[in-house]
Length: 122
Image 1 (cartoon, helix red, strand yellow):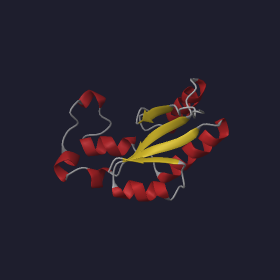
Image 2: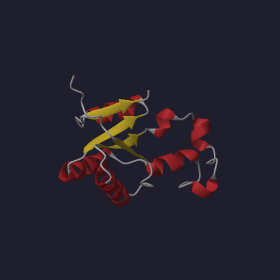
Image 3: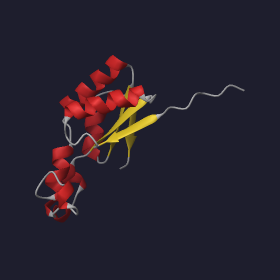
C-alpha cells in the first residue's frame, strides 16, 4: 500500500505583526524548517466583530496595536494586494501559500486569488 506524504503547515497567522517584511521572514523560516505550506489568516473585522467588540479595548493593552480591539485587528490585516505579494514570494521560494478566512467577505476576497489551499472557519 502506498501512502501519501503528509503536508506540514506552518501557521503564521498574524505573527507578522502587520509587517510584510516580517511575513516574508516567517515564510522563509517555514520553508527552511521543512514546511510545505505557509498559512495566514484573513478577517474583515467590522463584519466579524459586533460593534461592542470592535469598540472595546484590547483585553491586554500591552499587546495592542490600536486604541480598540477592532483597531488592533485592522492593523494586523493584510490587504489583498499584500496577500498577492505573499503568494508571489511563496512561489519564488517553492512553498505553498494558504490562508484561513473568518467571514464571508474574506472568503469571497481570497477566492478571487485562486489559491490552492484556503480554509474557512465561518
